[in-house]
Image 1 (cartoon, rainbow, N blue to C red):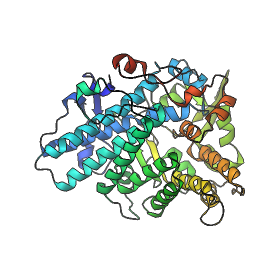
Image 2 (image 1 turned 135 degrees about the vertical axis):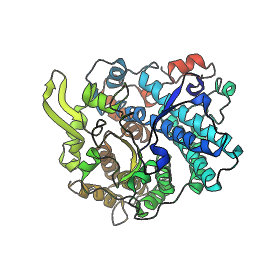
Image 3 (image 1 turned 120 degrees about the horizontal axis):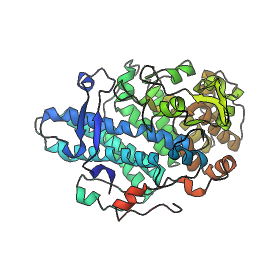
Length: 457
């Protein structure tokens, strides 16, 4: 059974940080199976439900990208994180289950909007187009994360429960074709953002044409469409909507910086600092996982520059197997860094650098090295000076470690570049090629007879 058809499922709809009054209301609870979209006044509550479901993917997505790879070592008592830290992952892992649930919660509500909104009279055409476009974007994003995490996944395009209770997996390539179709459809009707806009919270919280194009740039990179990855990243960089933060430490310590392209916000009621899959709780409160010695060395290297502000050291934590280091990017409700950034402008420079390097555009003003050095300059790190293509590509890989550490991308990067086996087998004797995809959650296999497990699990 796909998670979103369970009657017990409740999505907490909480006020998103925004200047829009409708999204600052008191929290309400919404049963997915009781979603109502019958009149114009129903549109905004369901839209908030969509954003809330989308936000629910963020923490387990960060866990997938960082904990499956070489960024962490287990330091606590939870079985889920011991499995991820020691590379002995099973299909009963709670984080694996949580991400699957978040993906299909989002898809369910996106499908609901696309089915029901055309039938509601009295909704302005502009609202209808925008909310439908948001639903398409978020369904595309969810399927993108699902395909690159689990491989072949069910392509769910309806809210019909009997259909969704017995749906087989669709080939990853077909899922990704559907992702691009959703992104392109969304791009048509998402709102534009003027160059130089200073409303950084709205620009990063709500879907618009530029952050949709940023997601497309990542899509094209993963699909190895180097020309379109370069072109789309250039469009985002050149839009003037987002600008690089002067000090890298602000990216660690502050929410909604001018660099944030897509960010999910939290408030006192739903801060991710508590709970089994909350990042602050795992990194700081419980210290369930700590930065691996490898990533500590990388972030403290000369090439990283000021990006070592991502982590911090305390002598009080230095004991036993604890190396004393802590991830600082995810704070509590009382701190100004409790959000989760999904895309920021620095990634666009890294996407363009990799795409250019793959096309042999290595040096000069429009070369890969120039893009890497934009980030090196910001981080007060020495400039990249290599010129051979293989060396530039390795420099891009290292730069993604320095720049994007603990932003949920490392595992996906290693797999998509076919570097996972070389890097991870050196990191852990337990690494196995089956870990290049997560298993389908065991409870989903048990409840849906049409689902088949990934090999090796």
